[in-house]
Length: 236
Image (cartoon, rainbow, N blue to C red; front, side):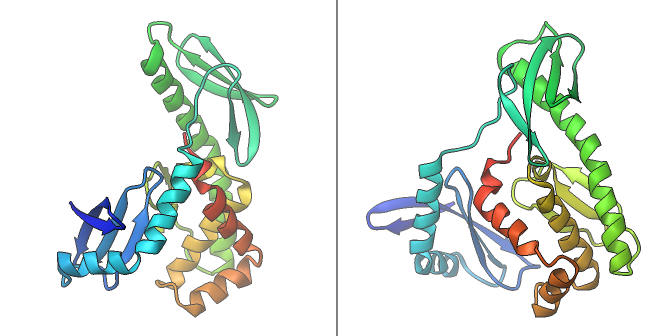
């Protein structure tokens, strides 16, 4: 761990080297952590120089996160949560750990032996379990639709909690979608499936890839906008 010095401020900088990477990238997470990823052929000095050249952007991103704060989701009666963009009211009670949705209400049950942070953790886990089960059907329908359009074998789809990636295409043409997307409007989930299915044919982000995405989903840029503007809010 090194640091980026900018106008007297010392900003911790994590440098990640990779044999598979051909170019560099910089990311700033909602907690303000700055990570720069570079090819293994680069040195720490090279990475710091890149960060210095992008210091204005880094500061802007950090300030944006500081201004909006960190999104938190709670699971007490009276709280709300979204499912594919639709708001659900939360009602929590004691009982066997479970979660179910009925008439716009997310009913969560937590064993009485749990309290405080432990009870909150149990509630969160039951909600994620429910969301993954419900979300898998929706995502799989999109996968069926777009794999047929792209004339590729239907890939298996999995849902995981991920810190950085919203979605990815595995070396064996499987698809992994970030569970946080289940909180977003359905257009976002559809776009991520389109993005990864198209990657089965186009293993890059060149013009031909984006042309194909636009062909099969003309309104994909609306989903991109939602990801950039509201993605930070979608947390379990």
